[in-house]
Image (tube, rainbow, N blue to C red):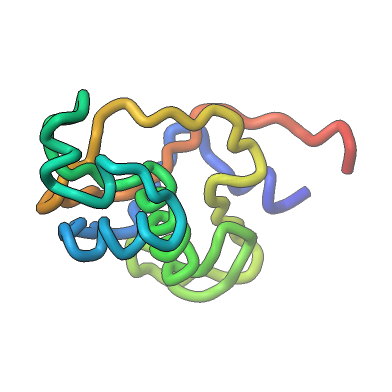
Length: 129
């Protein structure tokens, strides 16, 4: 399988950066994760986080937006994240398949900027297809 052969252990793909504003944190929280520390500065200050905090789901939604803008998580032709030409014989994979361990290690506060990247740490052939 040519796509599998193209994947190199240690390869890094960078998808871009995003700054989380207080307004965007609250807007996302009202729609999808209405916990007090995502909605209100005073409630957040009294929480274990101590300040307004982005939902983990918000951080993941931004990641998916950046991955899609870079060509999507499935094999695709076109420019690679680094800008060099990429043929349809090359595969770029996002968080799936193989995404099985999601953890939020630190809170993301209003004004924080995250840079999203993926590193290939291992590969194995699928047993199911």
